[in-house]
Figure 1 (cartoon, one colour):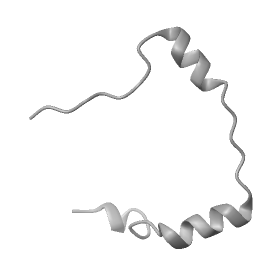
Figure 2 (cartoon, rainbow, N blue to C red):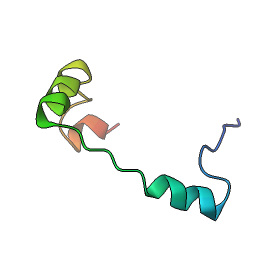
Figure 3 (cartoon, one colour):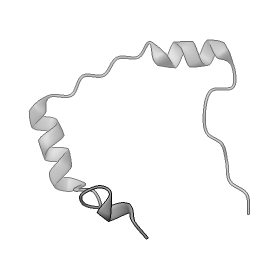
Length: 48
């Protein structure tokens, strides 16, 4: 089985990506939680 490893190829690209800033409002985060509620409470939702 194989899979891609996604990420920066150089230290410069990593530093460039780390400078990005993103601020989401509480209202937007709440609306995203309604669309994508997640699996449930942790750790129960992640137990096999």
